[in-house]
Amino acid sequence: MTELRKIERALISVSDKTGIVDFAKALVSFGVEIISTGGTAKALRENGVEVIDVSEITGFPEMMDGRVKTLHPKIHGAFLALRDNEAHVAAMQKHGIKPIDLVVVNLYSFEQTITKKGVTLDEAVENIDIGGPAMIRSAAKNWRDVAVLTDPFLYPEIIDELERHDGAVSLETRARLAAQAYGRTSTYDLVIAAFLSGQLPKDDGGEVWQNLRSEALQIANNGFPDRLGLLFARVTDLRYGENPHQKAALYANDEGGIAKAEQLHGKEMSFNNYVDADAAWNLVQDFDELAVAIIKHTNPSGVGVGETNEEAYRRALSTDQVSAFGGIVAFNRTVNAAVAASVNEVFTEVVIAPDFEADALELFRSKKNLRVLKLGTMGRNASVNERAPLTHEFRRISGGFLVQEADTHLLKIGDLKFVTKRRPTDAEIKAMLLAWKVCKHVKSNAIVIANESQTIGVGAGQMNRVDSVRIAAMRAERFDLSMKGAALASDAFFPFRDSVDEAAKLGIAAIIQPGGSIKDDESIAAADEHRIAMAFAGIRHFKH
Image (tube, rainbow, N blue to C red; front, side, top):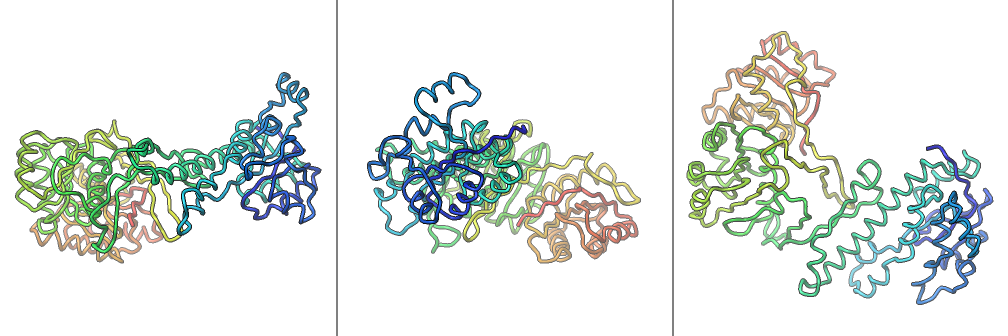
């Protein structure tokens, strides 16, 4: 893909005029003829740039308050005609259509309009751009012949390319610009759809919008488009948010997961219930084997594996019987009556599972306030071979969003790098892997102590790693759980040897950590001194 296309004619029609005068002057310096519309043409002329009005090309004036100006065959034909297609070239000659090689369009600021206080529906509708998206899509469809720019930040890059290629743009650049352009129009339409969905009562067609979904993250730039549009339908208002003085609501798309769980019993879910339930469900889905997790304030108070739900639940509960009070319990297998009776012995806010046997559900229904969520095969289910993991995560910050790929990494034995003189036993490796799976779901700085079948102690969210080790040990000691021969997992590397020395005092036999510290040698030496087996995972699992 190295074909260059000389830019000879450009159409410029922009709402955001940032940098447009300098960009147009640069185009003129390469001999480019400029066609423009309305306010853009006026701004360019006032700054000494010669332009041709679109109305001169189409033979029609702008009309209907500017609603109709570029929707014409002499404009769209100039974008869409294939330059190497004889029939297309003949049609252009017959109808007096001259090709346009560059389209510079950004759209009416609908997003800004609808955020204005007191904006009316009519005002918002008038700021829905029609001609702009149409031109962008036409030009992008013919990216082999036409370059399309949708944002001022692209101008310097294109000027640089024009300078390097004597007024031409490469095929690679045109293809990338087309992908970005479709990303822009798709997110623009999603914002409009989301706004209109909020204006329409369900009885008047509002339900149509419930099934719309954003694919914005998969459009361009390796999963991260230049503009991000997200559309989620409101499922329900919540009683309140994290605290009673905060209003809240639940929104969902069609990806499944906790937001689309079927509630089989209990009072309505709260904001905090949803947050904790999501943490619990995500944790148990990382286990191939039967597993149970108990979550409190998004951190696991205990995790157990076993041959039965009852066995796994008892092990999870034994890690921290106090914190389990008022917790969230998640299963990755269908729940039966035996474990339901055990769960009912402890005050529990929410129980989550792929499904529930009838007698188990009957037992849970004896608890008036217990919320019971059925996930079925939505989202990731119990079999890793059937999982559909989340691809991206979003976090709101003031003024924007942070977007990242979801941490779906699952460590295998073959990934481990054994770095100490003593290699861990098979039992110790199993304990290390269990601790590591749980550690991924604990707030940093995270320390998890575990044996082959359950967590023994969890240290979460501390400002230093040694304190996390001590807190994990404190929990184990509180519930008389032996740490002798257990494994310890750390979500990030040890900056010093002090955590290893602390672990040795507890009787820890094996440690798993990412590795990568400039003082790894000191931690390894400490492990060797204490005859602790240590493995590097080669990957970090921070959870902020």
